[in-house]
Image (cartoon, rainbow, N blue to C red):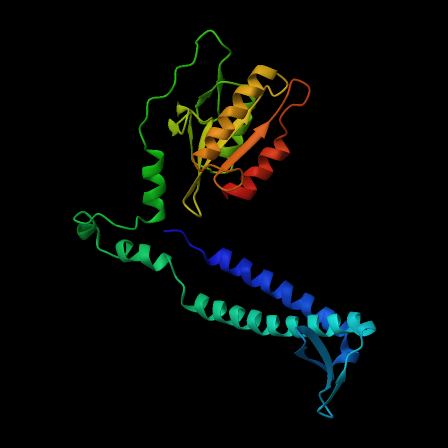
Length: 266
């Protein structure tokens, strides 16, 4: 089961940033703190009034004061928004004090070894989940023996030098992957993505396709159709799919590969 603690902590950071933004804007209209707005209708038209909060009096707002009205209305909106943001932030903090997804795994891990032999865990402990993911059996595609051989550090044979760079960097980062694991796409049928990768922390799979001849028109057109088939099947860049590209004049960058791994897979 995915642990959302990190995502919730990021949301708190986003909320704090919004609150800071609101506080800074409030300082710019500090001189209007005693001003409020009342609204009524006359002959179907909105009429605005200034409300003096200290004197509890109001007067008609002139049309030329519209910019000032907007500033006060914006301040009032942001004040209400801040209250809601503060409440949500505090609620998330309180929830995080109790939130412990790993305790679900520990129900099984805390059992005696003899009892574990009798039980199939509904929520697999991470170590077991990853090990079973790695053990998935599938029939690999054949590679023409006459082409140049590229083997990763872990002995996985790939088809190109660029794929070799990706494979080695995945292995160096401890990212489990399956090379050319079969996948069915709508409108295209069975395909073999270059890499199917597992984010161990989130237990989420990502398809990684490397498009290596994008200056070849026929190759590019064929793979645009393939990318569309991925999208029609629910695979979207940044959500559950990674794409890298190169041409004969622009080789793949190891820095880009490293950034992709850091962003999506660790």
